[in-house]
Length: 412
Image (cartoon, rainbow, N blue to C red):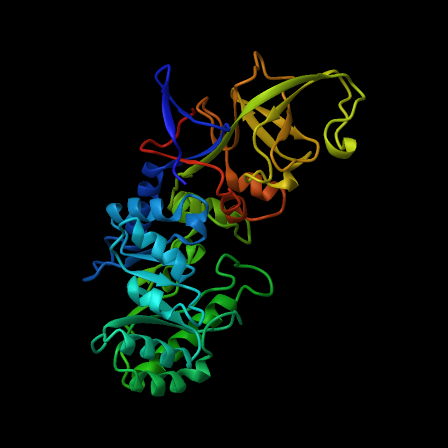
């Protein structure tokens, strides 16, 4: 939800519990433009530029799906990707008019919600076509007025029709006069992997996909927009860019992890990005703890020296990953302070003994730039606990207000 703000000594402040996420609309816009330029190199001189389908599912990777979509539509995004009819409707209610694709298809009963909001569903089973056609007939919609995208499972073994079901799809589609195939796509399982036993999987998926599309064409069905590339493929596999690309994590400022790791530096150099979200809280108490006394649940942290332990007004109920206990750090006044003890639902403790002049009310940055020239990047935090960046970003809960800024970083 957007944050409430009030003016206080010339600085905007969050009203209420002092935990918030700052989302830089300038960073999002920068990343979108960088991606568009990258997949449309001037050397290609394409007649039709590749389109961008911005992934705003999962509440915009925790950034606020409707708000992000509205900003990215203004910045020139061509399509938006959501998980469900409900997510798509929220984006529509924000005023977004550009096309929306429900990436994980639909559950029976969602058809009317999709049609009412002009959300194109992914078709992942042949029998779904009849349900959509019936819903369109009830609404008395015209010929080829309901957009759909066909998802083909090319080897991930998750969602999508099998290549062997292309003929089945074609037969059912020809019976559905109100449906229009706007695009055909697949999803890569390992596009960031260039070494080891699954290194060839992406190439195998590409081959399976293109054979399926050619079969569709041979049956007289135009595939519409062809799209395969997710974030890693956008950054490192130009042969997969096709007609449209689907940036997710890179849209929010982070490259995925690559194997081998050297690929990351190459990707970051070719496609520089700016992290869009910072998670911040404030110190609400400072305790002087003698050496040898336990801190927090089960005394999982016992300082060896007399220590200043700050209590932060954010816990795992807000999005501070519980795995960061005794492993992570926060930025306070430009200094990295260790997170200590078990992270609670509502608070986190940090050892601020070595932070000069620390006081109640100081800002602690869980990840993001801290306004003092330091950056605690979410991908670095994620790697330190063996998870992915998206896990951290999506973990920022609904009770954390989002502040949308027009600059690249700030500190409240």
